[in-house]
Image (cartoon, rainbow, N blue to C red):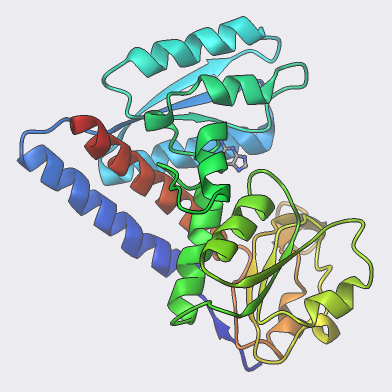
Length: 292
Ligand code: GUN
């Protein structure tokens, strides 16, 4: 193996310590404790785990969290009413509506109902729209894409002119990552299920961000020697040797890629810890924006 392993846990821990210090500084200067409201609709097991870990992370840095759970059959009006109530609550600086929402709910309308000053996930259409436009700045950048960029900025003094390939075009990761890479002056190619000659396109990447949700899809011979790989995929594969009967792998075959790449994130322990750290950072920023 030749690649450096990018330690997301260590980078995330360092960011969390910075947020914790920022929270303490607010409290010392007589300002309010930052607050994050989480909204979970239904019982998606993965979403339950994610929301719980976000709440735990808040507690660890001194951010108050307010958990709101609605049943799977909650109406559009009920969810929007809750968001409106949280918009008006001065103890709530950030609002996170966990995605995906149960089918039947209008996600765009619910995300649009969040006050842009409290949109710590950065998914409000105005924040995403600003991200996509030259000369405009969103108030908040989505957390996983922000974490990906944070890691890349540690690996490269500049991304200018580099070939960046993004696998996946989701609203949560692929598309906002691609927009951020464009803003960093990379030359960006977005690949998806209809892309032709995918291995050839991936082989052009100095920077590869994989976010397709297909276990170990990217193989050794797809990778340009010396590339930096950020693997956002979290996929379960059966493994009878593990107590739970499965293990987690990324979208990139780690052992193979590590022989060719310059640096790579592991799964787990790569991007995941950065997502949560960025949410905490955005919540602290929301609180200070709302002081004014
Ligand atoms: N579902 C998967 N990732 C995310 C995220 O970053 N934020 C929200 N709200 N939902 C998600």
